[in-house]
Length: 61
Image (cartoon, rainbow, N blue to C red; front, side, top):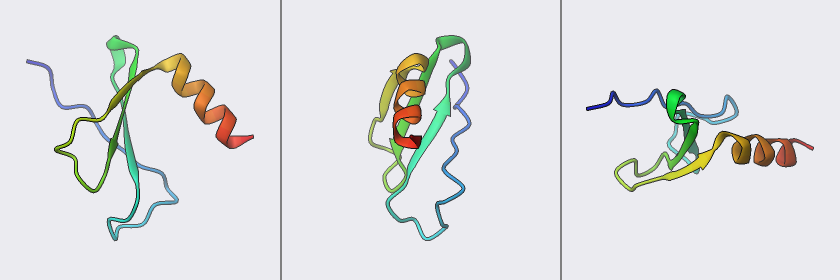
C-alpha cells in the first residue's frame, strides 16, 4: 500500500475552505494529482508532469 501523498494549495488560498484546488506530486509515478479542497473524498484528476507544467505556464503568462 502506498502512502498518502502530501497535498498543498496555493499561498493565495485562505483557510476559510473556499474554492481551492489541492495538488500533490506523486514522485515516481510522474503524475500530478489535483483535487477539490472542499470534498477530498471525491476522486481527483491525475495529469502528467508535462501537462501540469504546460497548464501552469499558460495560466502564469
